[in-house]
Amino acid sequence: MTKKLFKYMFLVAFVSLLATVILVMGVLYNYFSGEISKNLLNEAEYIAGAVETGGNAYLETIKNVNTNRITLIGKDGNVLFDSNADAESMENHSDRKEFIDALNTGKGEDERYSDTLSEKTIYQAVLMDDGNVLRLSATHHTLWMIVFGMLQPIVVVVAAALVLSLILAMRLSKRLLKPVNDMDLNNPDIDEEYVEFGPLLNKIKHQNIMINMQMKELRKKQDEFRVITENMSEGIIIIDNNTELLSYNSAALDLLDAEMPEEGGGSAIYLNRSEAFRKAIEEALSGKHSLQNMELKNRCLQIIANPVWADEEIHGAVLIIMDITEKEHRERLRREFTSNVSHELKTPLTSIYGMSEILMNGMVKSEDVKDFASSIHDETGRLITLINDIIKLSQLDEAAPGMEKEVVDLFDTAKSVTERLSSVAEKKNVGFELYGEQTPIEGVPSIIEEIIYNLCENAVKYNKDGGYVKIYVTNTGHMHGSIEVDDSGIGIPPEHLDRVFERFYRVDKSHSKTIGGTGLGLSIVKHGAAYHNGRIEIKSKVGEGTKIKVIL
Ligand code: ADP
Image (tube, rainbow, N blue to C red; front, side, top):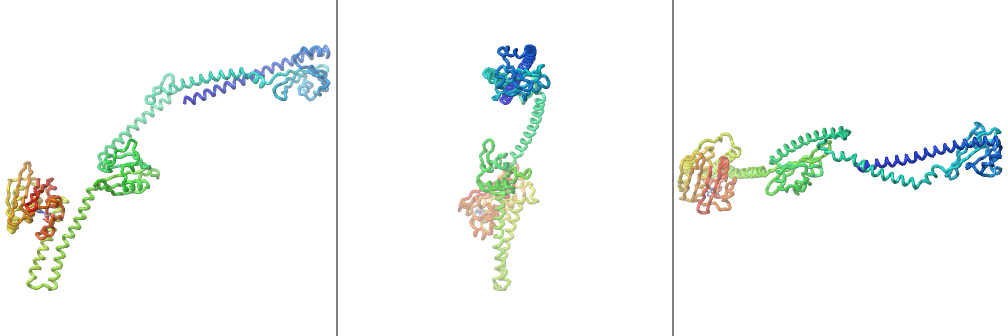
């Protein structure tokens, strides 16, 4: 701005200086030309008068005195006398303007330039009484020649003026712009010295208020957005159409296991280099909705990417990243469970179908019919037990209605379970020993009974002939307690300990099946305990026995 102002000021000063010099010289030149012309006329009139009284001889007398050229032209245009040349050798002047004008009006004048334009001759002619014309002429330099002659002083003056205008323009432009440069645009106060800036400063002031208000609003919205997104467990990433990060929440970085991007963002591609993540971005930026699944550090992630449209153009994309590990796990368990259930149901049903078909075709001897019927009865019994266990599990899974908690006593429940299992235990020659005290807890009676029943039934089932089952009930107070079932059975190998609580998991499949196991008992115990926010501890030694404690 200062430079521009200085340039214009200097240019204006220079042009006006040049114009002034040219104008002044032109005016002076015209003035002096006029003066010469006037003097020439006066002199011509004077000499004409003298010639009229003194005759042509007068001309000879002033020939050498007068500096101007004197020419006497006859009526016919022939030169009668010339102070500078031989009159007879001169051409006829009847076509000269000044001569013609003098003949017609009594006076005539003309100016003529030399061939080189370096000189100008002014002619003044007057008509005399005898009809002849007396002409006086003076030659002087043209304006250009004068200027050329004065070039040196003119250059000096112009240069000095230029330097002066240069300095002045520089100072003036700086001074003019100083208040503008010194202006505090955040707090524009009107300076009395520069009231002209008033409207501009008022406008800036108004705009400042508007900008501040908009900034406040923007910051508020940004904070709101940040609070919302930061409290989300889903990751959010917003990018522009060049994949540059515009916004993201910490959940996104956490889920993608990405480092905090450098200040300014950078490309979202660098957050995660997996094929699925890249594909989601590419598809969204090409205008398509994209849904991608990826695995990262034992986690299953789902990426939903959508393009952001504005004015029918893609301006970027929004990516939502969700942790679907739990969902995937459940889905896998459900698939496994369905296939296990079908398998478990199919085996007894196939044998029931086969045996009933043989019976139907009369292919069984009458003495074997009873055995066949008893096998069908056993298989059906197994099916019913299996289906009952499945129902119990699904009730636990879905928190079925009717499972309201109430006060239930662990000791009393354990006692009734041992009574229910006494005949089975007797058959195996296994004795129950119950220790402890009344332990009321808050729970669903049917589930608590199911937990204790399954533990005790397993302790009998997987026991040795003549073994024992010790049950310890401990009251830990505040409606909490624990029950531990110890047996002197076959024990569980350590590598199976973690898995016995899985659905349909059996250490020894054939053994479990012969003794009527469904593979769901400990699963029901695990879900039942979880339903009461309890936990399970298991200790076992092969050949010595198993201890399972449920803390509720
Ligand atoms: P099942 O109906 O087959 O008994 P469970 O879920 O109750 O199924 O038990 C899973 C597996 O854990 C059993 O098949 C068995 O191998 C083992 N198991 C459970 N309880 C005991 C125990 N007290 N002693 C030895 N093994 C046991």
